[in-house]
Image (tube, rainbow, N blue to C red):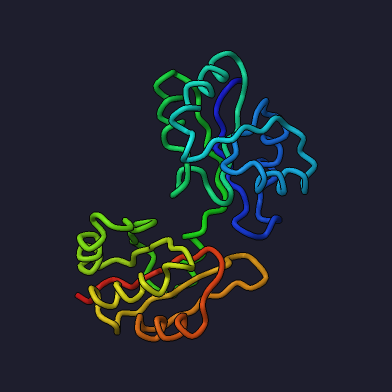
Length: 224
């Protein structure tokens, strides 16, 4: 049946993909990939030979209608991103909304996403938590940090290695340098690291040891 499949892909270790995900990728007519080169490595590893189209944040407004027409015409499509679950700080929302509006079935497979292992590894309460994703780079950044400072539940941020120290310093400014946090990087890869401590300790560590790789910051909520 023609439909859109949202297929999570490994965030590092290529073994972290489900049998169902592999079956879907082999069965669909077209695979929509955030970066065709990155996804090509995964597809070659599992000997999946399918038509691949680029679908990313810079072209999704232009490609959504074409994809919807393909599926409405009888084709099936799988959306994947470079790593993790489509739609979580990655392209996906616009296409899902357009497909649903057109009466097209959308099926999301369960699978890898970076913030879940980072949250559970942190040791902070995870019965209730807030996922922020990437902070605004400029406009609204300070307002958002002020909001986060008052949250009682654990909250989660994504960050690049180049902005990690700056973000930690700003968290210290708005939340207090003694607030506890955990920085997870290179999750599921050979050099996976989960470093816990006060925000001040983490700033000092990463100033002395510039980080590499994808990063998740988990921060404890404010005290009662």
